[in-house]
Length: 425
Image 1 (cartoon, rainbow, N blue to C red):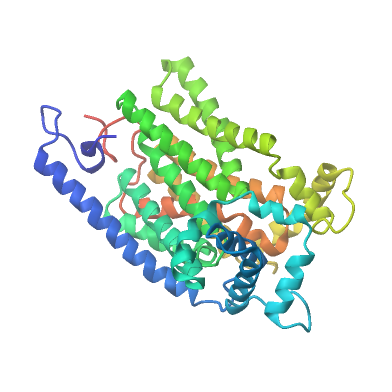
Image 2: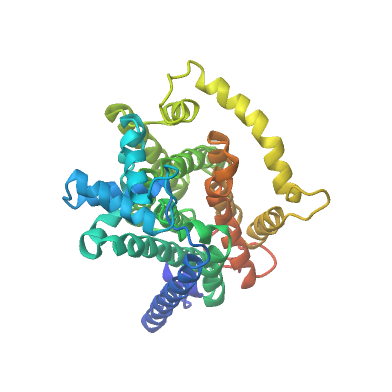
């Protein structure tokens, strides 16, 4: 997407004036810097909202990050145990001091369980340089950097969609004020997985508009591929489902578009990038025996591999979902209390309505599909105590929809090239 398509109309000869391009780039950079400052402030506020910043998963990520810096295994164990205890995680062993109890708990975990975390190195790999330089504080700094990056990318997505400065800053604010903000401020992989997913979505926005050069489309397709793979190696439940869902939805859209008007290069490249991301991870999983959905189900039904494998994990998952969803839907519908309003459901409905009101069809479809993968993640891992964490990406369409509605006309912008919010010239 050209600069003039994003920030204003081109001159009569079709070429943007150099001063206009320069001013648009300066405004964009300053806006993103403002989003970074706002995101940093809101992240700190979210960090302070709850005393517990670490969870059992944090131990494995911290241990792997320390190991990546060359720390011996025993010292990496101590480093990870000290960190999670200082960041509010209670001792996993009742009556045992936290550090000692955490190390005992970790030592008792079967290698199969540990491998679930060691085969998703994205978060730990990002943290390793910070840990090497800053020690335990590096974990906090790395997580903050990933979360702030997610806030900046949310702002960038809105700018690419045609929103102004107010809308882009609103996107950053909403990302941290909605439930996403809590999990982005915990020492978990959610910050990295969300940032990489948003990077892929930012690259997708201009790619899904008609026009552009073949080189530009390939570069954007590569960025989509890199973002999706980054999200997958950080948190497969987010990245893989997102890649697969986008492949399915946009393959159908590509074929429909072909029947009406022929192949559209941007759609083809985007769909191919999503499909390649899905295939690459599935191929690596098979070649390297990376734990997949079947293994995580065994982990659940064998209580972290402390019991024999079950012969029927998939039928058990179906049964578990049958028991899980009535209560979960009731909680979302009325907060568990008869006739009570559900802020969760109200925000989702308003956010998705805003998304389709403020955006052109395929851009709205892009973010709506992303949000739907949150529900797919919960279907694959139906667990009430982690439901809000598992559905995290369901809030991304709400963030974009509400932010865009602040600075957009009442009707959607066109899918074709031109100034956003106005018919093409």
